[in-house]
Every structure is written in C-alpha cells, then in structure tokens.
Image (cartoon, rainbow, N blue to C red; front, side, top):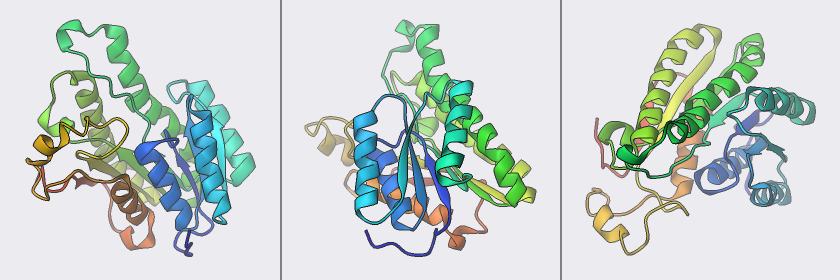
Length: 250
C-alpha cells in the first residue's frame, strides 16, 4: 500500500466493509492515509482479514461488530471507534441487503429489513457521528445507492425504494449541513463484479447494455469514494455520482 498524506489524520468509518465494494473502499481510504474503522454485522473473519491487510501495509484499522439497524448498537460502536481511533471524520454508508423478492410475495418484515439497514441504519450512523463533525466544522458523508433507484428492477421494490431514499437523504443533508462544513454525496454503482453479482454466464448479455462493454470493478467505486473524501472534492456536495460505465447518463 502506497500511502499518501491526502487523508492523513482522518478517521473513516465504513459500514458493511468486510466484502466487495465496502472492502475496496476501506482499503482505498487506508491507502490515502486514513485510519479505518471496519464495520460488519456478522462477517467478523472477513472484516479482520481486511484490517490485517491494512495493518500489514503500514496502515491503521480496527473492526467493529454492530448491526447498524440497532440505534443502541450504533452508539456503542461509535463510542468504541472514538476510543480506539479518535472521532470520525469520514462516514461511508455501504451496508445494505439486496435480496430479490417479487413484490406479490414480499412480506412487510422483508420490506422493513431492507429499509432498517439502508435508511434507518444511515440515520443512526449519521446521528452518531454528526456532533463530532459539527464541533470540528468539517466532515464527509458518503451514501451508496444504485442504478435501480432510477430504473427500478423486478424483485427489488424494497431496495429500489431504499436507494431512492438515500439519494434524497443525501441532497437534503447536503443543504442542511453545508453551512456546518460537512459535505454529503452519494455514489450510485451500476453493474459490478462482486460476489453478489450475476453469474458469469449472464454477464455478457448484461454488459451489452453498458457503453463501456463490461462490468465495473470494486476498486473503481473505491477510487470515487477516495476522491469525494479528498481536499480536491472540497466544493462538491449534494451530488449523486453515477459510476456505471455509461449505462445511465443524466
């Protein structure tokens, strides 16, 4: 890991950081010099592996187990992060649930599970870190949405609704928190090669609808997150950045 001073002295909390895009973001922010708090609900072994990879490269990282849908658990996690690493400067809200269920078969509990993580969890995490950011008159918050917020998708009414909500939350918070020196942006990934992605047999057909002709890689989302956290993005807030190979052009 070739660290730079770009985010030196900053503490970044990344939710859902044990795998896939969250893992890539944690590694990228560490490469930029940030101390990284790696959150997971249940994937402790994978989260510890991410932390060890960061530490082996000379960075600082620690794992924090918490269900972000639980307000008390988030508060406890935040207290532990402050004790172990210092107050949070950067919050990346990546944790989510992406199960496909036809709406005609979807139960309210299944609807609420997605909402409780994507929207309630984001609420709890932001409320926890916000006092410290306000005190410093500085902070960066990044939400992770997705293209189905725009296009919709069969079997994803719950996640499409949640992602649309995150984009709206981003814009509203950016207006409210901008005067306090806090920037809020949203990254909207398209199709990416992750362990949750479609099978490889299905990918050629799907990628034919992407102008760049391929699925994205997690490190490409991570690079976008790193930029949005950097001083170079200091005049960017309230934006939804679409990283999708041109599949959606707005």
